[in-house]
Amino acid sequence: MTIQEPTSGADSHAPEAQALDRLMLEFRPALTRYFVRRVKLKDEIPDLIQEVFVRLLRRDDSTHLESVRGYVFETAHSVAIDWLRRYESHRRGVHETFDTQLHGGAECATDQLLMGREDLECVISALMELPERTRAVFILRRMESMKFKDIAVRLGVSLSTVEQHMYRAMAHLMSRLREGL
Image (cartoon, rainbow, N blue to C red):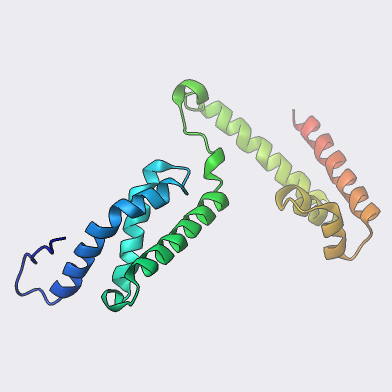
């Protein structure tokens, strides 16, 4: 294996740059194989390999490790786990790219926007007419996606009380929306 010469003799980081270049030459093929077996999106592999080397560069003494190979693959394992967590938390596997043929490319007409705003104002107005607890139940259920039993615990009421408040809120909102149409 050859070590590349630094481009500038005045570079104070030349030894670190040479060591990193040597590590990149030595481990890039093995890291590529490592990530191919573990990552769903193959176009992410170059970024993951780069992240391994960035983390190695952040470590001041990576060239003086007793087992550089072990540290490189331990770092690669951490990078793979971090990538998987991001992948799962962002639900990237279920995203669909925007396609104007499928999703339509036409802009909303101004009258549709105004009607939507009027409907929203009607819903907000109807929500504000509700008693505070009924409004809280509706918001916790519909906007915070809380379960009825969790709402009951949070508000210190029974499950049936939460269900009654939700029923009242829905009936009131439906009545007000019908009046608005």
